Image 1 (tube, rainbow, N blue to C red):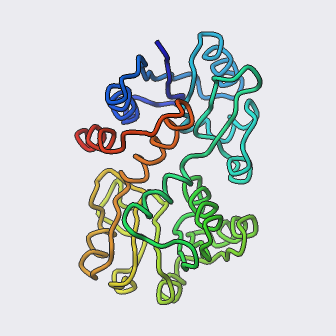
Image 2 (cartoon, one colour):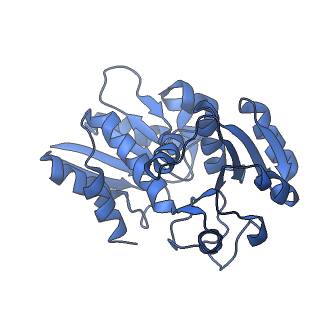
Length: 269
């Protein structure tokens, strides 16, 4: 039996196990997905990765607080190296484990699944943290022109310096940025704990595609207000789904059963 898992602290809230195990069942794979919660320090992380490999674990997802530190213990692909974070490790080879960042690809697949054209689009990413960084790189690599808006403008500008053809801005510039945008992605946690949005409702338009990385709740205030404006809306579960889809395909080489994974995910939201 093949074993895959999740490294994080905490991990009790994770929706990855039911999503991946639904895929194994659909594909007829003899596999299990388990969670590991090591102490939140770099030395323990290294031992955890080495221990998982020694036990024959074939792949790991990585979540908070380990995504950045995991870079030191894998051979990252180009995208993960540029983003500066790893959320998927392939342990199946004989050499150094390979590291990937499927958050960026998950965001792109979520947008494309809803008919959003990315190449040549003008995109606004709200937030310059880990999710915002991954999404900004993904959009730029796919051919979008990216504007990053963040509460601390200097952080947005620092990220924009690393992302090809990107620009950094403060949140007060959102109305002007969105007047020219095709795609808006909220990569902050605003809307998770309270009924709030990082984007002024009056800045939303019917010809925007709006994705929120928040998936609890599925319908955030941003998405409600975007729908009221007639925009295409994409909830955060789609990005969560497709980052898992991409990880599974890296590990197994199989085409992921997207519908089965999506059903298992949404049954628990």
